Length: 337
View 1 (cartoon, rainbow, N blue to C red):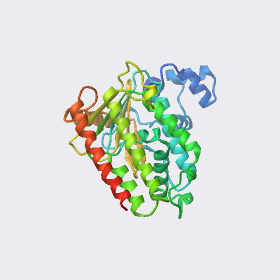
View 2: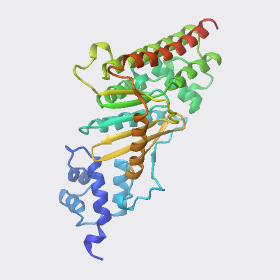
View 3: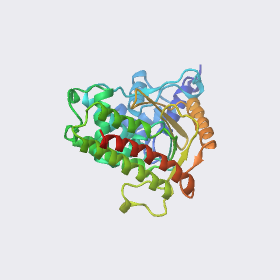
View 4: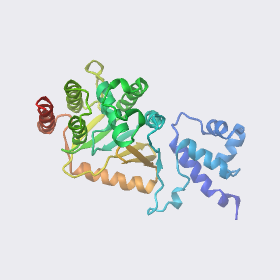
């Protein structure tokens, strides 16, 4: 077999790696540092003149979080996903937030990047605009999903949440706001957060009524914030920081049940899909065939949905009016409880 034939798979792998890196990054310099070889040796691997060793391929895949399977050898019936396991260790949750921030930072480094989010639940980023609400979500996830020891026998208390988690949340929403995005919500998208607050209230996991009402108040602020962003078709943190002439946010209302949170990231020549599992975690795949299927599913979903951002004032009002009514019912239940 010729040398060219021997390295066909390597060439595809290198091309996939190139696509996964921002254009301003030198692949040769990256591989030189990662593999601890000279720049010339890195170039020879890029050109296919020197074969990558198994150890080098594994190191590259782990570092850049990409699968080895070449596009030409992808099996549409077998998809490789990457996961970030979560457990009761608070360090694992801290890593989850850090990875989320780093992923958004990488996505934002690509010119023309786009995020399409089919939301069964409110996209996690939006909670991070409001400190008490993000603290509540952190506590809920760690207590009810991960059984973290620091929540054992405890009621919700913002003081239990590391300030570093709140800070990372701020960084996450700032990064998300910079990436143009399309979100697809249903009438049930807000229900998850409302049910979490209701569960804590009914289970006596708020220290007092005032704390429960504080969180419902922040949920209300978040919904108003989302309505305002939809009106202006742009993402921002506060009213004082609204970008001018920036059209980077579209919101759709879908009558079709979404089923789970699904994110498609478009990065020029490549795509990546994020699927939710175990409540708050995501598994990821850059499989070309799977991302193409996801892309088609999302396009069909959008085609059948109603755009409620921008000039769609009537439909936007009706959509958010329902959310405020659900929230008010919960608020009255807590006040009268």
